[in-house]
Each structure stands twice: as structure tokens, then as C-alpha cells.
Image 1 (cartoon, one colour):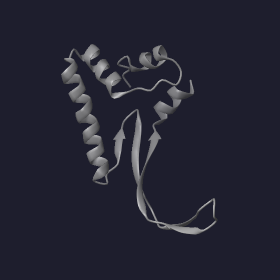
Image 2 (cartoon, one colour):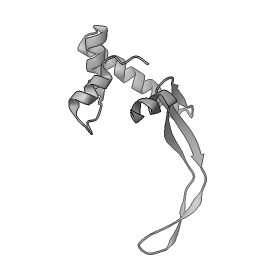
Image 3 (cartoon, rainbow, N blue to C red):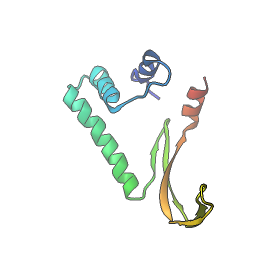
Image 4 (spheres, rainbow, N blue to C red):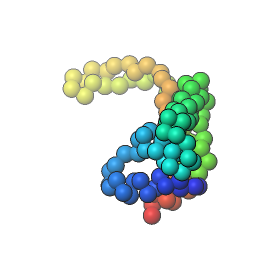
Length: 109
């Protein structure tokens, strides 16, 4: 998996720092030579395409990074912890992320 300088951003920003859209656009600007507007547009289009794919019920897999997986959860009975009253929880679709083995190995270092 190509670094593109993103790993360096996390170390420079300190522990607990969050990688943002602006950070991704800045890396595209510096490494690919795109203008700032073009690099921001590329990041937005990629994220938009990923969201649209998930919204249509399809999973997203990025090799070497991980998979965004949709799962249908059935109706179940929950309980209000304060009152103890049982409440039905409607069926819904949830998204989970599963990191690839490459990503898990890099994080474990």
C-alpha cells in the first residue's frame, strides 16, 4: 500500500490526531501536483462515490485498507435502563468497518 505521506501526517500531528478531508486534499496537492481546488474535488468525489455505493446497499472494499460492510439487523426488544420498560427496536441497516490484514499489521506495530 502506497504511503503518499499520510502516515507521516499522523506522527507529526501527535497521538490522537484525526486525519481530515483537508489533510487528504493537502496530500493529493503536494504529492500529485494538483491544485488545491482540484485535490479537494478529487477527495470529495471519492467520498461521495463511496457514500452513494453504500446508500444503494452495496459494500465498499478498498484493497490493503479494509471493507465497509452493510448488515441488516432484525427487529428486537430493548429495555429502557432507567425504567426497565421493554421497547421494540425497529429493523435497520448498519455499516461496519473491517480493516484488512495489511492495515491490522501496520496498526499493531
